[in-house]
Amino acid sequence: LDLDVVRYNEALDKRSNGRVAKHEETLLKKFPHGSECVLEEPLVILDSAGHIILWYLPGAISPWIQVSFIMGSHLTKSMSSGQDTQWRTFAGNFHTSDRQQLIPGCINLAPCWFQQGREVSTAS
Image (tube, rainbow, N blue to C red):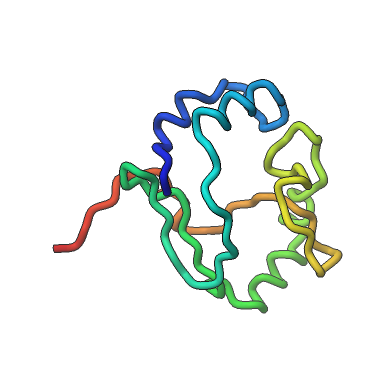
């Protein structure tokens, strides 16, 4: 990814929520978007300095476990439409789902979450 996530983080305001047009324009000029693609294979996305930005692991959580997450009372209560000022639930940040019970949003279920944004060491 042609982006230094540390520089990007430094450019963010502490209250950045992705909804302030002037601030977003400034960020977009400093850090223009790259090309978009649909991810279909497992991969790791790194920034220009080698920091892990994303681990994409489709199928890592089996469908029956996903259903139990969705149906679990704690998860159902934690996912709400939220405020439009919250990036984690702002509908414009997500593709609509063909499963109506799913509310667009970002929730972390990954045990690898801790490693995001950490240095990458190469195996010798």
